[in-house]
Image (cartoon, rainbow, N blue to C red; front, side, top):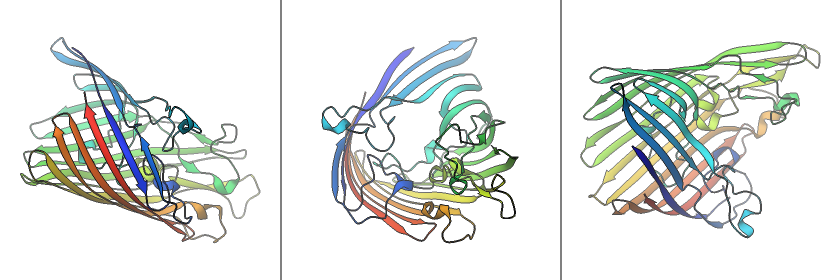
Length: 366
């Protein structure tokens, strides 16, 4: 079976405070004075191609999907002048056969079914939100699903204080010597599900004088529960040392590379950072066509006490978010909603910033 599906989504945004792109870009919130701004875009629109068939008594499927967020949270420079063109990007490209999956999709550490329902594409802060190449094996019992994977590694250590530029391949000392490993146990029942997951990572950097490596890890719990036929709770919490990008807004802050206090200019220390994050979401359904959602999330990175003039002062330390929306299912394939979002940020230096956003969205699935 061959199938083409997707959606067209239009977002109308008004930022009452500082602007934050076409989706809320949590870690790039500025501390400037408020600047009200409006924006209309359709970049979350999506195209999906899938196939499915039985081979030797087992289901074989393939998925290829993308959207138009290749330029990141903001539209490409000058694109709004004439055409509002946005580049297509790969979201999913994987195949599955029986108990095996291979390709790019959500990390085995991620629990997609526990995501809050928000109009903002970035969702709440503190979530685990990562797609990458992997090989996964799963097996199940009546209520339990166990899954294990090796996944694409990416050392996301901050080199700011050393003067090295992590965006410059010639001066980026990070090395990925071994795959990330994840394991998950998920319990499913009529009331919902509960998921426990972990990830093990090896961070390695190579400088002129030495090679440094540390093992990082993360532990998470997530799920959803149907309290009543009309009331649904979703939640997630993760914590770890060197967990970094497995908490969305902690990406790039799994650790810090600093110059050794008693060393020459070319010697460094690698320190992994502890981070934690999570969210809680509540949904109430009034009837078959009308529902409301409220959710709140947080993220915190434990930076060490250092000189107040250090180069990490501009880094994000704490984030909190709140989303509230009402969504109307106009038809089985079309819905519209309005949402209010608020985000508060605290940097390592103590500087603060916030976002207050109103968003109107319409979505048509095909």
